[in-house]
Every structure is written in structure tokens, then in C-alpha cells.
Image (cartoon, rainbow, N blue to C red; front, side):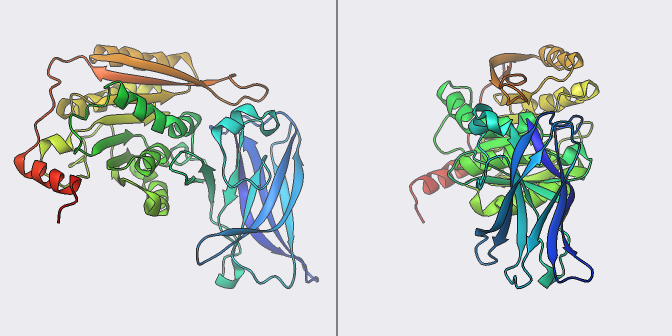
Length: 388
């Protein structure tokens, strides 16, 4: 896939000696790692949107098309603002699909005109409140289920920990069906109807996979984990998504070379049954072969207390050194329960690259679920039957 990114976020530009005012920005269209640019021509829709401060509803103020030409590394965009304009704040949306409210993975895959390019929504510009330059964030919007698009911010800077990557986006868009299928096949070990689904995400980055899970699966508790440098962007996305979550989510700092945070589960109960992890998920975490030993070690630590946990790993292979991850998983006693492969939008055709999703379970003999405590079982039944 390719991503529209703001090299310079939208800003107010007032022309000297004139009453004319513009909003301008500088974009590029690049890969998730930012190491290559879209090599083909593409017509882009550029839209100036007024955002209601009451309900965040967006209304189109002005729009135009502009052309990205193969060989470009950047593209300057300017939109005029009438001198009598009074409706603030404003944001800019740039995308291949005109007036789209969000991106759909299937459309990116199937529509050749879109070239697999992910749209960008800027931060707000509001000179009435002293905001002449939008924050250095870009918002992505994806239809990932639950009838409400997931809004995820990523930074415009160079930190790979605070950007979205291909495998994470694809897993987020597929995770709902994946979990339903795993439940049907018995891979998600929920022995009764009371236990909330406990999920931990490793290397969450911007939080797209974990937040999607908490958004689309009721009675789920999701722990998003990553290094401290990811904390700010995850918290930003967590706060922006909280009102639409059907489950719960929180962020915990976790260095794979350190001990697990205590408690790993956000469930406050002391019942060991309820604190067991049902799912461990990680996307785009195998690209650095040097981190594979500590990644697998961290998964092992979780499985020591949650032996029946399903491990879901999503990856887009970038080099052969990533094969070492599979060796470490095998040596650690994990068996492959299922493998699924999904094509990615390509510059010319879908399927030039793909995301692989591996599901593992531990081969250990001691995989019995811890029994629920009497107190917690009583509380669960009260919740089930809606008793006071």
C-alpha cells in the first residue's frame, strides 16, 4: 500500500499586500516505511472541511483535484479561503476517492484508480483560537466493523513506532472475522459464557489492532503494550476512540527485555481464570530479526500463566532474515494452528505483496483452564442476568 503523508501540515498563509488568505500543505505518497514513492500518475481529491465543534460533523467548504506525477517526491497543495470566511476550525483531506468518509480495504484492493493509496485527514487549523498550523499528526480512517469507522492518528515524523504499517492495517480490517472463526473452531478458549475476552497486543505502535478489537468485540478487555516512545500516540488514539469502544482498552509500557507489567490484564478481579489471556496479538513485529528472541521470550512469559492463549502474528515479509522468528517459535514449543495469506494493494496489481497471519498455540501438556473463583462466578452470573 501507499500512504499520503504531510511533509508540512496545513497552515494559514496570508499574502503580503493582499486580503487573500490560503491554506497550504506539502504532501508525499510513500510506502509504510517511507523508503519509496508512488511511481505512477494519480489524480487526487483535495477537500477543505469545516468541523463542527458541537458534534465533530464535517461539511465540505471547497474542493479541487490535483495531480501526482510519477517520479515526484512531494506535491505542494494550496486552497483559497474567502476573506469573509467565518466557519472554523478547518481540516484538509487528501485521497484518491473523492469525498470519501473513510477508506475500505476492499476498495483499495479492487479499484485500480486508487492505486492502493491510503487517504490522509489533517489536524485542525483555527486562527480564531491561535492555531495557524495544524499539529504534526495525520489521521487515517478505516471501516473495520461495528458500523463506525476507526479513526487512528499517526505522526508525520520519522519514528517507525508512531506510524501505521501494512500488516497492522490489514489485520485490523480482518480481525473481527478472524476472531469469530477462531471461536467457532475452538481456538479461542472460552469455556463458559461469562468470561470477558482478554487480549494483549505486543508492539502496538499507534494502537490500530488493539483498538479495533475493543471497538468491535463486546465484553473484551484489551491491553496495548509498547515502548515508552509509543505512549503519547497510543494515548491520543485511545482517548479519541474511547466513546466508540464496546470493550475496554488501556496502554501499558513494555520492553520485551523486561518483566511483564503487573497486572497485565486490566481486569481488576483477583480470579486467575478471568485474568488469563485468551489472545496475544502482534503485527509488524518480526521485521527486525535481532528482536525475535526477546519477542518470542515475551510470548513465552505470557503463556506461562495463560497456557491456552491463541497467538496471532501478522507480518509482511521484507527480507529473508525474518525466517528466524519461525525457528524461535518452534524451539519455544509453539505449533502452528492456522495460516492465512491476504493480498495487498499493489502499484500495478493487487497481490504484488501480501500479509501473512500465523496463529499459534503452545504444545505444552498443561493447557487446562484455571477454574473461576466462587466470588467471580457469582458476579458474572449477576451480570449475565442483569441482576442489581
